[in-house]
Image (cartoon, rainbow, N blue to C red; front, side, top):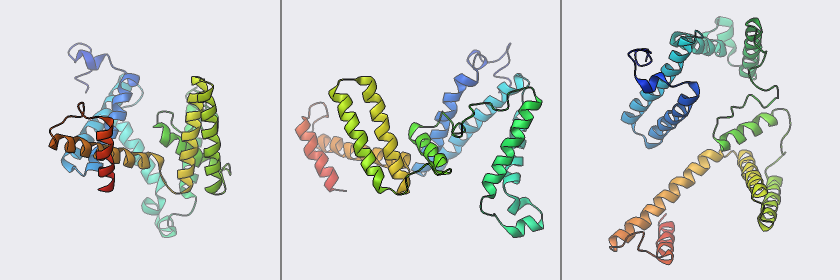
Length: 261
């Protein structure tokens, strides 16, 4: 990567990149790792983990060029963090025999944040590198459904939560009513907001049932793909294409796909 980024002999594309332009590729590679795992393809997983590792190397190289940190510092930081967060494994005999006490993980993370703030102040930087609010530690770049879940989980830590799942269904119906009203008024800005509110409430409902919205939707996506492929395959057996089939034809085969499991 250092050779690729060399200003004189490197690759022009690699040289002109920065943290912001590479970040989307980092996210994409993480998804491809997850995809290989979901497919159970360990050959692909090996390759995709290499691609993801390259992203870490890429960011570390750019940071090294800026005089901030190098790849070795990244490895050292995560090693120290794992040791620090697992005293019941890496600590002294007393810590190991005590096991992982309830609340220890959060207490260690809180201590880490305090140390990080102190280090930032020592460098002449603001104490926080993002907003000051309780929820600001939830990464903005997360997929929206996952971020909604994490925001709700964190708010729940201080008691801002529904007591049970049932009333959330009423909230979902309320939000759908507001969505219908926005649609009736042909107010697209309000429609967008209300649509988001419905999704947020659905994520909350799933959380109370112990269901992850991202994983649930991923399952539905795959179910839709599989059933649509059944429609496509069935049409092919009838020597017809998707473009030639009517909606009624496709609906008939869709219902057959559903009944087939």
